Image 1: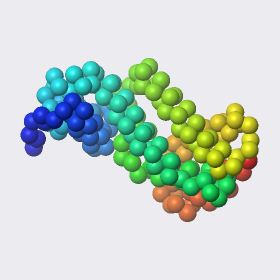
Image 2: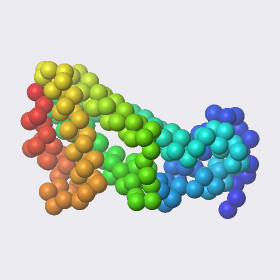
Image 3: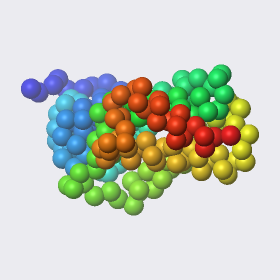
Image 4: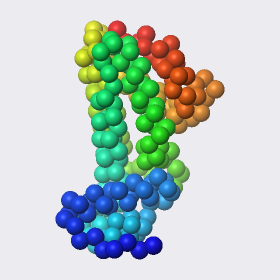
Length: 195
């Protein structure tokens, strides 16, 4: 079905393009993201699409940033009033929920064989990891963590990497779709890392 031509402002067109890209990635994955389909779904011409996002990689990078920003906003809602260990458990549980429930984020984790990450995208992934670990470390510090900054950053990064790994590769050790199991797992294995 062809959508009507989008004559909105450039900012609104970019938002429509990113929304269409998110829908397409959730449906077919990053490797099969079609710029033609995105342009059609956003109601813009190919030239407008490429004016807003000069390459497919630029569009994927922008979509990754948008997805990350949404995730960070959700993680900011994790409570810090019950101490650093409870905050670590809550952040891990919310991270797993995001990774299992947010379709675009799931597709970014699944990086199928048809998709080759560019150096720019790998740099963005590193930046996302550092930003997420920094945000988590700040939340843990605000919740009362007293360990040295470098150790706190390392623990935050381990939590994030572990959540991503557990969601990517199924294991009998944890059913990532079971909130209670995720909570028990985090209390048992991850909370003791936070002091």
